[in-house]
Length: 166
Image (tube, rainbow, N blue to C red; front, side, top):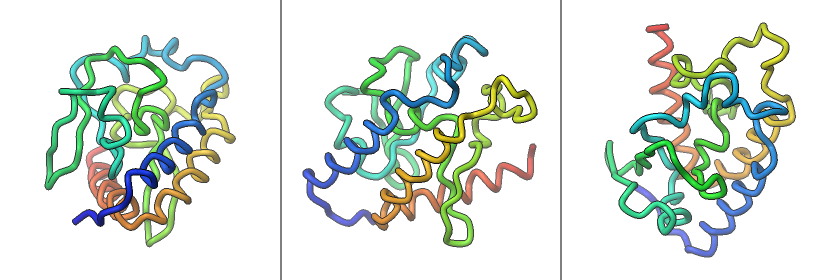
């Protein structure tokens, strides 16, 4: 169950996190050119991190639904204003795993069927180290919030379970 935190704190947390990725992306060029932006196609959804729906809700009216014990899911139609995209999109294709109570940023296995950045043996499409490091730094701060830590831990378990099938 989520702990009650102030709207001011929520806005500060997510405003700082979002700004960290305003100009920083996985590659030095638009990675969507590699795959025709497959991550932004269709009627897919992205989990929102705890309290994130409060921060971005006004920009995504009628696009947020709740699943699995109240996890907010943003239903995407493939078109958005880049400055209002959720944190999951900003850090894609990485995820902040919690493994043995420690933060580890790595490729999100849920992206395996759509993202060419999984092929880390191709030099031209290596995820920038500074991008991965920034995801780590941002989430090192965010997981100080127990709800965000618990969410990352729970999703980490789900993703690692999926690994058995790849």
